[in-house]
Amino acid sequence: MKTREMTLRVTADEAAPGHSRSYLLELKPFLEPRFDDVALVLSELVTNSVKHGTSDGEIRVRVTATGDSIRLEVGDGGRGFDAAESRGDGMGLNIIDMVADDWGVRRDGQFIVWVEMKRTT
Image 1 (cartoon, rainbow, N blue to C red):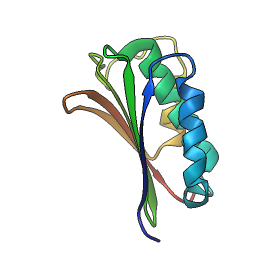
Image 2: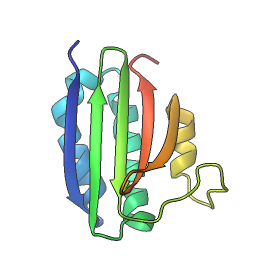
Image 3: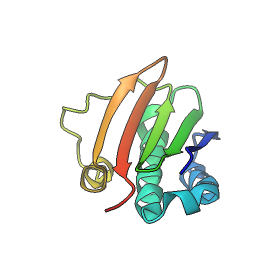
Image 4: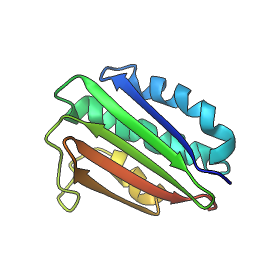
């Protein structure tokens, strides 16, 4: 399978998670059988950026599907968090812990949360 990628920028508002998921439909055939997991993780990450992260009003999303893996990256202009610290009362990152094979954070001119998933469960 060739690598497929989707990148987009969404306004950091209450419509951002749904808007991101609607664009994800373009890649659905390349994300199966993990499409629902990818949509859930994407929604959680974008929601977190809306609630906690962005300082510039924009969220950047990248989804890459290869033959054996799927990678999501959600970035914003916020200050971010340390992945090793307590996460508070929210369930979003706990869901990602359960669904993702690996995830982490990095700063690259913006704060980015990345998630890796194997294509098969």
